[in-house]
Amino acid sequence: MARSKEFDENAVLDKAMRLFWEQGYEKTSMTDLVEFMGIHRRSLYDTFGDKHTLYLKAMDRFNEKINAALAAGVKRSKTAKEALLFIFNFMIDGQADSPPGCLMVNSAVELAARDADVDLKFTKMFTVAEQQLKEIILWGQRDGEFSSDYDADELAEYVHNVWVGLRVMTRTSVAKEKLHRIANTSIKFLEG
Image 1 (cartoon, rainbow, N blue to C red):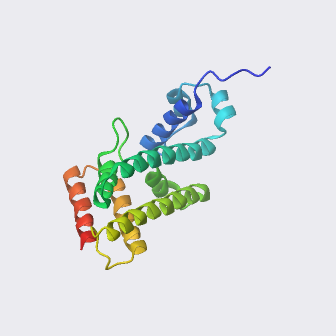
Image 2: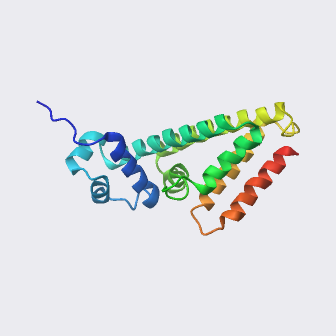
Image 3: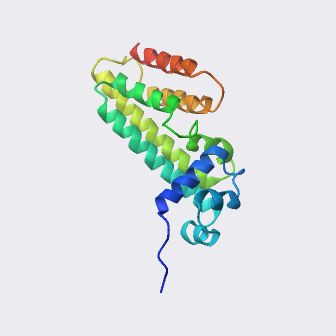
């Protein structure tokens, strides 16, 4: 008779996600994961597979959580400008008790050039993010908040590049005031 799991899979996956987010893939050992997740090594392998598979699952978990938080914030926004400000502020200020930066951007920088699985995941996530930004930009263009001088697809690519840059910069000692100025300048650009 198979034993039932003595842990909540999502809770321990969240712990792995956090450790990878803080340390990166290469600096995180299986021993680190076992200790931080609070489960036995055998349970880790049986439930999540090897370190690489666990990392990919942690990336998926991060993506699900971030997408849910962003979708909720955008949905509450009354204007396209407010929605973009929410996204920028979310990326700059983070969530309470979360590491700075972004696990997906960190993964792209650390591994995408040599890991096809990671590259595919972050490429898909970036495509979805650009589509979400395009929808917000179209909303702003329809309502007259944003200039229609540029194509919404091109603007979404531009804004996404700013968004990714902000995620990288949040891991540095750059003052948040500067990051907020960059975000506000990007919105002013959209307004025309």
